[in-house]
Length: 322
Image (tube, rainbow, N blue to C red):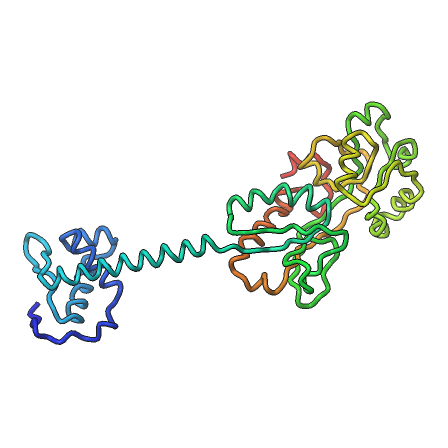
């Protein structure tokens, strides 16, 4: 190439990292063709890269012959330095990956009793196994958690958000249907209409009292006058009592995907249907590392995957609805 060993090298800070990577592969392979094949580039690209690197350093790095590419004395010294550089960058990359793996992201998800117990709580292990860097607290409350005030980072709620600085997206619909255990129905018979409920043991979640105005007028009036065998403020207590033969209870149809101890009374129309929402704070929106959690929540409630959350009521079981 005709470079003088006395040539003063250019500013080494301008060295092209890609040129150094190509130089390293050529030195390892001993030929331009071998390096081009490994790097999946044209041989001319490899040749130009070596010429640019030699021009920048002011020294020949290879003796070109029919036997291939042999390192010059300077080439050997440069290769040693380049290998050390690559080892250093690999160490840095490994350390950064380890720091990222060790990072813990604490997130508070607020929701209501039934949603937390019978859907979110049963599905969350799937996410945390795949993303061990997340530390998730599920905050259960009778009132909706206010993400704007910092009560939670993420909320899955039944009320449509109205706060301007809260990001909201409708997740789907919840349909309320009457359920009973097979043992209860075997003893007391199966009601064929709402009017038959007067002959049965009826159980109710006290929280539904706030929702009766959203139910069909005839349904809400009928439920108000029914005698209650039991009333509770806990969805868990209500479902357990229903599964144990305590009576008939209105329950969200998504229970049919999670619990086969209770049987849906599909001969009676749903009592009500209601929207539910995903809301989260500005901090969550601007945190890229939380995007996997948001995507997982959206998928977990996707109506195209889980027909129980579609706007149009589909009677359970949902095996043929997908």
